[in-house]
Length: 241
Image (cartoon, helix red, strand yellow):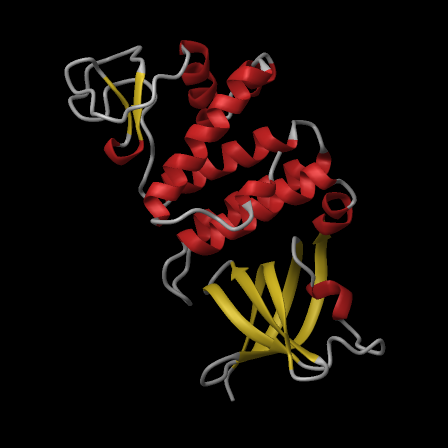
């Protein structure tokens, strides 16, 4: 059977039979891969703890017809240790994992940008230098941009007229001018639009100055924009603070 190696982030796991698990991975070279880790639920397993969500691992796998099989796992970065110890980090990082999996549409299709973006996001989450919710929102916006759904927070998403603009419409791709405003558009505060632009650009000094009100409003718009492009919301999003 073909044997290959790759780096990966563990996205999620589920039980299989009595002692195995199916591990969903975002790999560097092969995109989303689903693989079996045999015997991983036994206490004697040699790499069980290395295949938990949020962990960055170096893997050796055997290619299978339906599912690959993990034969070796080496931890590169145990992001899960710091993330799982804090509720806000855990729930926000769970949104990041689910977002990454949903936006990489085809299994085994390389998505190197999404892979590196997720590693950077988990590293920032584990380090705790920024609020967990801010890291999550920044990741979601950038992940959407990598997938081809970059929102506009400056020029009108329909006609390109330079802003600032006060209307936001997920289906139209971001902010809209008064002439292009669509029914059902949201009307966030100007400071919320500034915050959204800073999250997308990674302008952390501006993000750190944002008020809790602006953060709450921005979170709702990020969630709505993501749900529109995924055609349904994330299971993990309601739990994120």
